Image 1: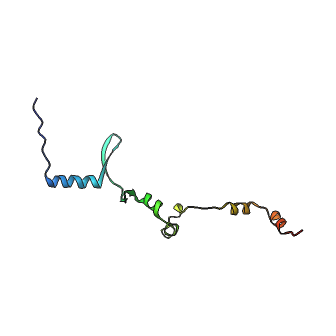
Image 2: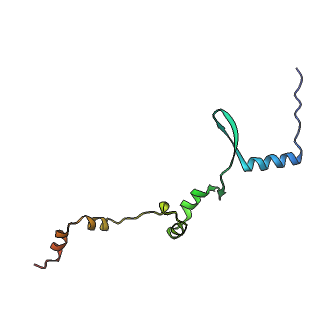
Image 3: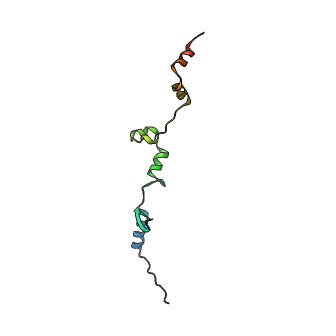
Length: 95
């Protein structure tokens, strides 16, 4: 059996291969190998992860991302809303 001679890539082919690998990722879907575009990255994180970790509530509100705004409820507000009106009058009676 003879030796298999592999052809070396030229510099232009190497640059094109590197650019292609940076722009696309290879995945298997239904047993077939496909190249899909990579998601945009910011500092090594996806854009959604970056926004969730670094955005403040004001920026999220300005950009209409209300579902990402953290909701903080204090226990005092919750107990005050549970009280009946009769209980609040009991606190006001001086004798």
